[in-house]
Length: 178
Image (cartoon, helix red, strand yellow):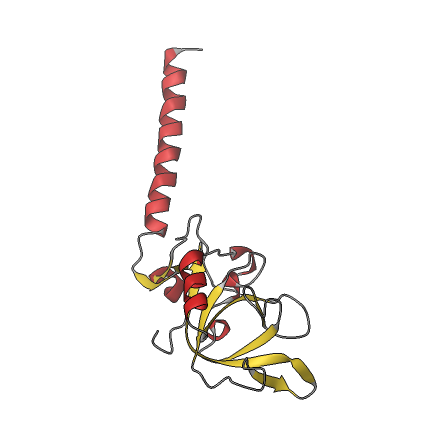
């Protein structure tokens, strides 16, 4: 192989590598809109304050939207009302790869079991929790395979926060302050 061919191959490899690095910085250089919380910090909040719970999306065709992921009521089906993550995030955060959410209730969720308001008399084991605020638990996963028409995808996305790209892309809609 001639030296000229080797040099050409190295230049092509360098250009491709530089393009990948530039794409990485371009995709993750957007302003932070909502910081995530670590699982350890979320579990500590749950242990210290009974207004906090950790939930994950439920992917069944019927039933509740979320399931409690940790603690005494783990596996319980739950609906989130008022300030729900599902009202503010697109499907890229809910499909295929599970994300966890730290939910702070507003305290209006007490019933006889001191847990939640029954969702519906036909579904006595599904509870509704009124959400005061929430945080997504890191690492944040996004699945652009299921994006909606007009949405963009990116090769690299931040694992520790929701950013301005998510807002511009319609993946995060902030209608209530955290």
